[in-house]
Image (cartoon, rainbow, N blue to C red; front, side):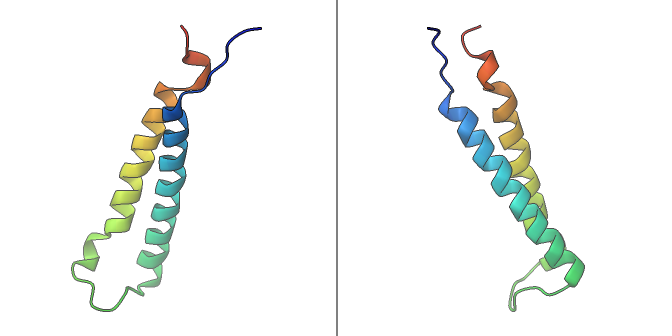
Length: 73
């Protein structure tokens, strides 16, 4: 039998990517609808879109860097 292990960092990358995409989608929906939570300052910066994109990029980095086929080589 061969030893096939998947790094925990691969799953962390998967979670970061999924969460990042969800945050970007909610930020874009908020941006398009124009309905922001009351009392939030600097809404014109659209922080959910930026943070979601950053999370997605970081998650994709981990997914590519620690993909299962790359282990042991």
